[in-house]
Length: 428
Image 1 (cartoon, helix red, strand yellow):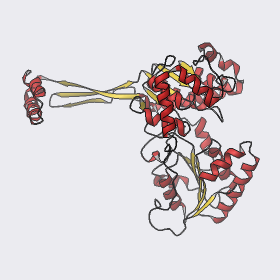
Image 2 (image 1 turned 90 degrees about the vertical axis):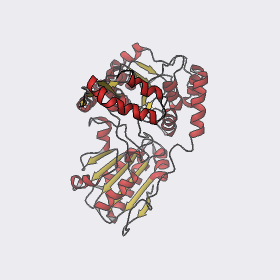
Image 3 (image 1 turned 60 degrees about the vertical axis):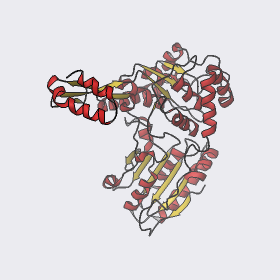
Image 4 (image 1 turned 120 degrees about the vertical axis):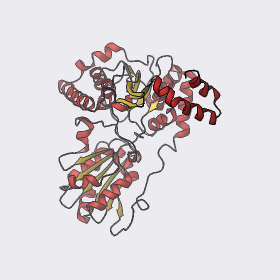
């Protein structure tokens, strides 16, 4: 299994023109996703059942998982998993509680006009946890926990059913732990449509969050506006590993394979200024892929999105990473802290040999729902703010109305809006 080689040593100028970019995410699935969303909007639960049977291969009668099955799930998973979920949940909760703004931002006063900014949680949030190749109880915690910290009253979760028509106990245990109110055995673009528009079984939500494949990510793009959707494109997994001459090849290789393991359409980049490191890491990747039970999936992902890129030095390596704007950036070099100020675009950065991205996937505290497809240039990890909105409350005292009101009248008349002007005159 070879990584595509890209030699940028000696390159002068920006790397934008020479770093290959994947095709625009979602372009090839847009029509298929639109058809799924339209079907769910027209036919509701009937469409969800038919699509679940078509895409997941299982006939499901009742879409919602019975609450008692969710509540009892922690007792059905191994004790070690139950404890790990508890530790992860508490660390995620503590981090998001630390970042939450529970109090108003403050009051702005000027010449008798008082403006208060108020922070309000959405009433109902929809979370999506992927399935198919793997089950992700960690994603349930990452989505539902900051929603609870934000003060969301109701949280609904959609997850694809397994071949037996059930949602995995590990996923249900995480849902129970995080206080999810409703769980539905629905996956794919149809789950996003159900959460956004509602069906007979699924009440519509105010925001939809959670990662997924291209179909899920494209569905969130298409329903944005009907519901709140984070600006990040949370699609297939990505990593850039920056390695130097002293980086253990096996550590760099396993961290490339970690992200490729999530499935198709992802990116796994090695960026180094050492010819020997590039060669050794590529050999280790080949050995790991050959020994993996997911060999076919890994080969498909790396054949399309795996690169070994040679540059002139550490600064050039970070410059290349900024162009890629990856979901995960690993700086597996002693000078990681010194390079951090150069990082401009990445979902999350992991510093040094002892800080792999997989730790951030579970227990670091910040969210593992991160921007992909170069949206890290402007978007951030999922957080409390994605479940809240801000409104401002304005109070005008009589002095301010008398002093400033005529200016409002002048502006309103200039715009041809006489009722606006009269609303002020009537108060003067």
